[in-house]
Each structure stands twice: as structure tokens, then as C-alpha cells.
Image 1 (tube, rainbow, N blue to C red):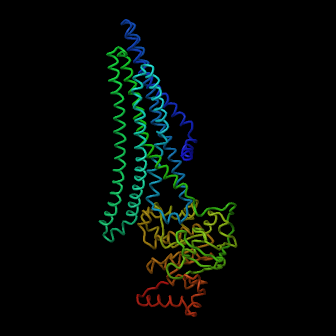
Image 2 (spheres, rainbow, N blue to C red; image 1 turned 180 degrees about the vertical axis):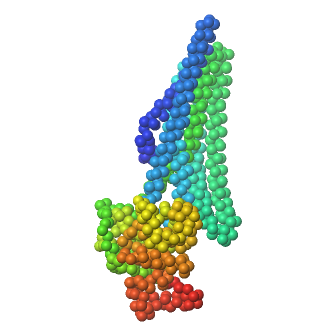
Image 3 (cartoon, rainbow, N blue to C red; image 1 turned 90 degrees about the vertical axis):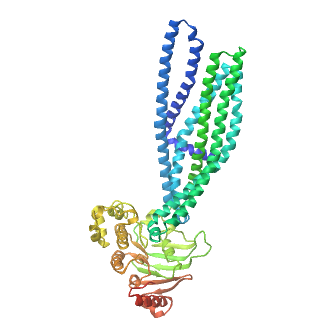
Length: 588
């Protein structure tokens, strides 16, 4: 707990002057609240005993003092509400930037096991509650303690017996609050988990809304959502059960303090032990005492919300990236493009089964190499080891003779261009999506890259040309158009090493032809690895590697592999039969 609170407190450091000012005005405001009942007591005990002329002058003067104090208190409350919230928002900004930067460092294996909605809830609703706690928490505690301690000191001077009666309820309240606090904490944590599940369900549904509608499965999705929504409602009901008991019980106890003080004071007045003015003052301070108690009740709920969110925040921040720069990692520059796999084996962390077995492979700079094989043979995995999306389990992957693990991730990945089957385009314009390949590129360079990718003509036919908004994930474009934009991005990046991961397998024949021309133009004079199914992509490859569960079982040119009459020849025979029947180029 001490470590967590120390880390939590560190977020105040950049805003310490603002934090101290916030605390100062909180103390001043709380002090004024204690002073005003003392002035009331002075008027009732002392001023009213004076003659009418003197009393009038004193009351006017004290009235002006109280108005001035109210004005100061008003400014204090304004500063706390305005600048205090700004401080909280700035801390929230810092924490959101911190966790977003942390997300960028985490590797593919992490995202393979996470839901986007869950990650989103940690960066939005969780952080809001944390910032509310960091803003209101310290000032509420300071104000409450000043009022409680100040009230106690003043009350005990008015009458010790009445004070002891009033404060006898405090231990009962503490025990009561502790009991409900424990259960509220568990309930609020469960709420967080359930709302994150709902966010994941909504994100999944909206991302796949076209699939939902194509299968007319709206009712099915509503059923799934209803299940999660019902679980969240049950969790909320549980938390509200404890919250209701907490608020109502402590509210009743604070009211009982006033009742007990009033009854005891009234009895003492009848015995002549207390005068009416002292009882009135005492009751005024009872309100001053019970008000911070209620504030502490609110703070406890806020603390449970904020601290639960902070625990979830720290859970995420404590996850270390699987792939990161080694100490002393060097920059990769002046790349020729030689790639070698030296006795490489690989398996995913959550699987004991090895995907790649003792792979040895040498690709010379400028070579055009194709990878074929059945699904699950490890073609994509092999290529993912080059930019270190995953690390080898044993062996080494080298570029120009240097182990990729000895290179900085940024310099390594900046030298590699990847064109995938599943193209991801960001919300924004055509120009912005191509510029993603090199953020400092000029408009002229972007247009040149689009021309090289055979994309310029269709872009100019769009309503606003390069400034056309393409919608979520490029929904306004065809598959071939999206693919050509992704190729234009890589043209703009201009890397010496290329990886084509089934880049044309989902396209129709006409789109495939145009995209293939773009890919061949892009691959010229670059080291290129192609994961391919369609023969049109690999027939001209300098080398074709046939990957199976046992590793690389065959390699050679298209003609050489056909002459061997092995695995490749069988795959070719199967696809050839399929293409003859369909009148299309088949897949390998």
C-alpha cells in the first residue's frame, strides 16, 4: 500500500505549486467555517447584553466582517472547484499519456490475449475516477480534519459533557464504515471488470457490424450484449446494496449525534448547567462537525472508485513488454538486405508446441524469395521474426550478419516494409494514410508514391482526391484500392527489405493484376520475402521455399520444384485442377 500511495503521490510533483495553493485555500475555507459560529456565539453572549446603540453598531460591524469572510470563502471554493479540477485534469492527461505510451511498447503476444474494449476502459473511465480522487481526495481530507479537530476543540470549551456525548458516536461510525468499506471495494472492482467486458462487446459488435448484418444476426448480438449487460447490472446492484447500507447507516448516525446533543443539552438547561446561547452555539458546531463526516463518507466512495481504477492502471503498467531494446542495442544503418536464419526454432509462450523447427535460411540482398505451404506451417511466424514482432525461442535471425536482438527496434523496423493481406487504414484522408509511411513526407512525395503504387488514378477519381475521408478502416474503398494505398505507404517509406504477407490472396483477378504490378515495382532491387498462395505472385520468384511442420522441406525455382515432383508439385497440381475448373488462377 505504501509503495502504491507513494507512486500515486508522485503525479502531484509537476503541479506542486497548484496543489499547495489548492490546499491553502481549502484550509482557509475550512477555517472560516469554524470562525463564523464563534462570531454568532459572541453576538448572542456579549453583544446582545449591550445597550441598543452599542449593540447595533457592533452587529453592523460584525455583519460586515461575516460578509467579508463569506466572500473569502466563496473565492476559496471557486479556486478549489476551478483550478483544483484543472490540476486533476492535468494529472489525468499525464497518466493517459503514460499508459498509451506503455501500450505502444507492448508486443504482439500481449495484444493477442487482450480485448480492445478492456484496454479502452483503463484509459478512459478508470483514469477519470483516478483524477477525481487525486483532486478531491487531499482537499476533502484536509477540510474534514480541520473541521473535525477545530469543532472538537471549540465544543470541548463550550461543554465537556456534551462533547463527549457527541463524539461517543465516532468509534461506532468508524467500525461501521470499515465493515462496509471492505465490501464496497470488492464490489467496485467487479463493476470495473463488468463495464470493461461491455466495452469489449460493443467494440467487437461495431467493428464487425457488416458481418452482423450480412448474417442477419442482430438478435444474436443483442442476446450476447444482454448477457453482459445483465452481469453488469447484477454487479452494480451488489455495489449499491453495500453503498446504500453505508450511506444510510452513517447518515443516521450523524443525525443521532445532533439528537443526542439536543436532548442532553435541553436537560442540562433545565438543571441550569448550560445556558441557551451555549446550546445554540454547540448545535451550530455539531453541524460543522457532521458536515465533514458526510464529506468523508463521500470521499470513501470516491476513494474506492479511484483506488480500484488505480489498481487496474498499475496492473497494466506493471506488464513488461516481451520485446524491448537490449542494453547497448545499436542502430541499424546502411542496410544491404542480407537475411539469415541460423538454426531458428520458435514457439508461442502459451503453447508448448514448436511452430518452427531448426530453420536455416540465407537470403541474399536483393533476392525475391517466396514461402508456400499449408496453413499453420509457420510462414507468417517466420517473417514476423525478422522485425522482432516475436523473439526466437532458440537460434538467431540476422540482418547483414547482425543479430536483430542487438539492434534498436525503431531502427530495425524502419528498414522493413510490410504489406499484409488484412490492410489497416486509419480514420482520416487518403493523404494522411499514405503519409503514415513517412510522417515528414511532402505532398509531392506522397503523390509520387501513389503513382508508383498504381493508386493515383483512382485517388483522383474520389470526391476530394487525396483529401477524401476514407471512413473507419477505409470502408469507402474497395479491397484492391485499400491494398494499393498500403503499398503506397511502403513506397513512401522506401525500405531495403520487404515482406508481402499474402498481399493479393483476397483480391479478384483484375485487382490482383493491378496490385501485383505495384508489388513487383516495389520489390525491384529490394530483398523481398513473399508469403503467397496465388501462383501469379511466385512463379517469377528467384527461390521458392516449401515450409511444413518439419521445417523447410523443399527449395528452388518454380520449374525446379515441379521437376522434383514433391510437395510443391502436389500443391501445384491441386491448385491447377482448381483453376482449370473455375477458370481462375488457383492458390497454393
